[in-house]
Each structure stands twice: as structure tokens, then as C-alpha cells.
Length: 137
Image (cartoon, rainbow, N blue to C red; front, side, top):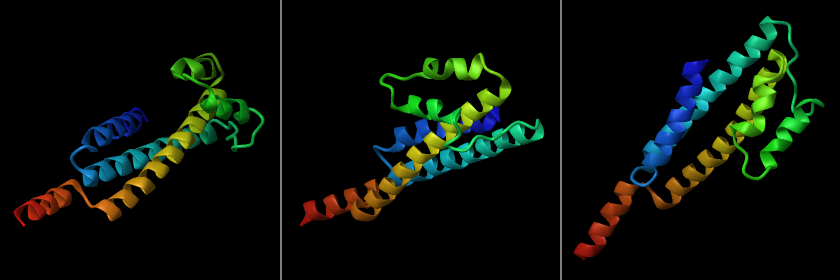
């Protein structure tokens, strides 16, 4: 679980770093991040199931206030800390599951936009080639 979480976080960061020079690499790394977080999601669902805890759906009464925190200004880990560190394991795991779903939603939006941009504009290398070709004319 730790490795999946680290991989997700690291690939988001590396994809962002690569965005200036390679849309192809950015797409790949964001996709890997998405897959890592999906793996982490399954691990948390297994954690709940193996212990006989409830898995909250998105409209569960306890999930709603946690999901609403995403709309607060200047949110950080501290925004969610009490739900994770000072709550029973069922609440902590479901909180993290809510956060993973929100992150995956945002990554899916980012992937769609990156794919669209890549199809419309091409990659960095393609744009350089076109500029060099235009310059030579």
C-alpha cells in the first residue's frame, strides 16, 4: 500500500515535471499514477472487507462531509487529519478511499485533456520539427 501510494504521488510529480518537454512522457506518467492509485484503492477496499467494515458509497451520510472538504479553500492534509489520525480504522480507510476517488477523478480529467492536446498540437518533438521546417523555408 505504501509503495502504491508513493508511486502515485511520484508519477504525478514526474509527469508534471516532464510536461514542458514531452507530452508523451507526461501522459505515460499520469497514466501510471492513475494505475497506482487504482491499486491503492483496491488495497483499502480489501482492508475494509477483510475486517468486516463497511465500504461507504459516495452518498453515505458519513462520506458526504468528507467529500465536501474538497471544496474548502486552502485545504491541506490538516483538513483531513482528524478523519485519518483520530478516527477508527473504518473511518480512516473510507476517508482515504474518498480522497483516492477525488484524485482519480482529477487525473482522469487531466488525462483526457492531455490526450486532446496531444492529438491537436502533437508533441514537443513534432512542434520543433515543424518550426525547423518552417524556418528553413
